[in-house]
Length: 73
Length: 437
Image (tube, rainbow over all chains, first blue to last red; front, side):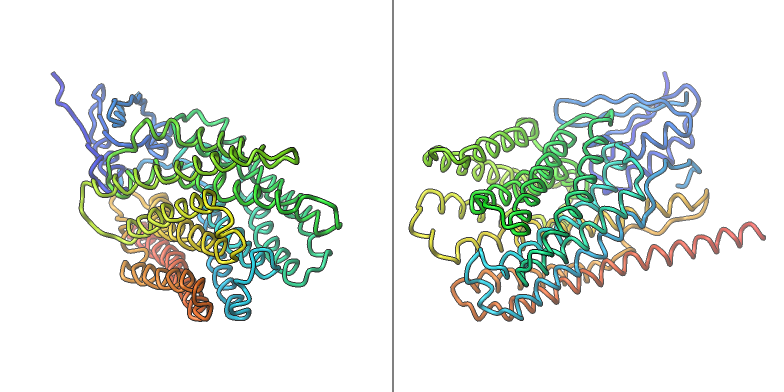
């Protein structure tokens, strides 16, 4: 089973979550997924993902946490 | 970090910065006007001086900063792209800056000519801004309570601009209009339908993000903007020249005020539950604003429920005006500028950098003690101006404190802009050195 890769950005001050996510994406092996947890939809990150050939999907938990799953396209 | 990813096209940093650099100047101008006019500025809300003061803050300071923030925030926070951002920026900035000066000249000189120029000029520039932003808000694929609140807020801005243009036409061409009724509705949409809803929409995003609080409860984010909109709309209809249902009008105004209290109390509670108990300037600015919002809403309810007692007293509108503008919106704007500008600096510097080249931290953009000092100065201005209602001579130190606070804000904003230029140059030098090595 693939190692779970998660960035929990909920307790972090921006732009820390984005910095951690970009670093984690840099070493993300093909076919694996990175999960980012935030309380908001990270639109600037979505733009970066699209431009750099990543796909993503997001869903909101009942407590308001947004889960963003990212992988190389 | 710096994994070498390319960033999406955000508008150039000069787009929002010119608004942020201009806004404090109008705050200083309002302070100067208070010093010049002294206690006469408080005589009545209907004098030219009072109207000039109101518009220096509401349009010159508030709307100026709000438009700048919105132009930058839409692509970054809502994924909404503005059509022709550079042109829209020039037009809006000119409309706000020259427009405020025209209104100021018109109210102080009572010359119709200024209003005759202001009406088409401001209606076209600000109207175009509102429509373009609205289109962007409807075209974005993003959903959620912020987008909904912003759409309603921009609609509120369109109502405010339309009523303002109607009122100014009344002054410019001596039209027989129900000026009192129109002014009440114009002010309510400007402060409630536009400003408060914009603050709410932005709060849903930035309070959890920058103050590390839990998210706003869904029952609030789902209902607040829509309910406030319908209350305002229904309240506005009661001002139509029919037999006025006063009981209904009072009930609707109180319900809207109560709703504002709910928003403020929820925000204060969330802030008390924040994950990191760091007390920093933006948090304190927001807290001050939310406390003032509760006080202002209580004032509105008291004024509605006990008419007659305070109705003829010119101090009541001044008190409410100071609480709302200097107590709620100016602090929120200052607090937000201290987050937005460092964040934009960081975001734009990221785009210049490359792997291995570290971009300065957000905290290096404006020194925190200087932000704290502005908070104290602003608090002093607020307390003195509120005190000027019972003790009119306090308007002098109050006006002076407002000038110093806004000058301090200007200094901080300039510092952020200068630091951007400095760091950009440093990054370019490092890049050039690496390439030549």
